[in-house]
Length: 242
Image 1 (cartoon, rainbow, N blue to C red):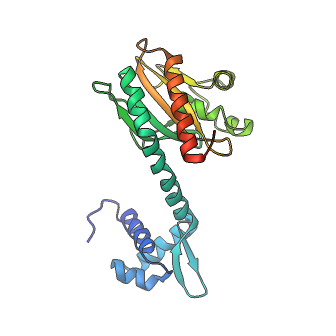
Image 2 (image 1 turned 120 degrees about the vertical axis):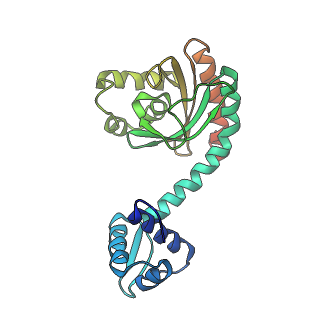
Image 3 (image 1 turned 180 degrees about the horizontal axis):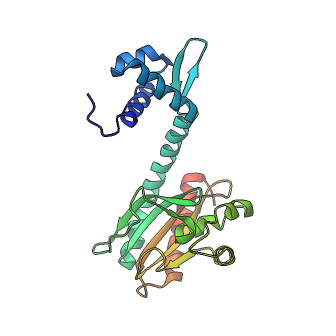
């Protein structure tokens, strides 16, 4: 029996795990039997998961299979992991050269999601660990990616608060003009970051590479050049983009 403090979440994950291991849609009765769940719990969970798109119901034979949302998550994972592997060495090298930390992230709406972090020996531990989300407009990584989006998209990603819209617009204009982004003591006191987008085969920002280092200890333009060269190599390897 599960000892989870959130049994509904645990049971929903077990249903997804079960559906992912069986090649054909299966009945609610089989799901109940395989997972030893109460009948009412099974149907309640399945209804919520169908509504959310993670499970699909096939009424003609009363069976259930994985939904589009589950496949989308799997596809995202399959894309992210090669990116992590392709960028790991570059980030380690550049982070080591400035005695800081390197980050791989992607856009998630108006936020960025950190996919990987590497640290040079002795580098400060930051909030930008793997799995953390931050407002995209506050970070060098986010600014580098937002600047490459169509106008309607970067406008929609604006989050009132830390920046006014005019300042936000000007920051992105500068990023587009020079090809890289920076932030100084916005995310962490005493730390500066430089970020460059990795552009996919259709010209959209697939991810961003960034390095964070103590303010005044590295030349931002030099760091940007290193990141840009790395991003180009990754884009060529991942997307065939020259």
